Length: 69
Image (cartoon, rainbow, N blue to C red; front, side):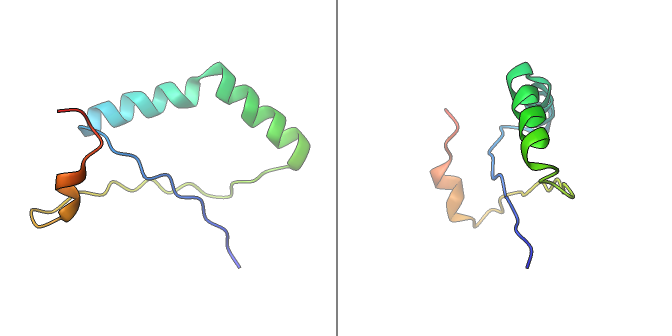
């Protein structure tokens, strides 16, 4: 059995996604949380897959964006 965590995030564009995700991964508090978790529990992530999903013209989600504007 495989356990999978999925982060489903909405970005206004790919450049913003890249910049904000890099900032999150470099955050000192997040780095410390990862370090402590690894020390206490060992590796919890074996593989990371980055997938960019795109809405299509007929997607009902287009009407429910959480982004401002």
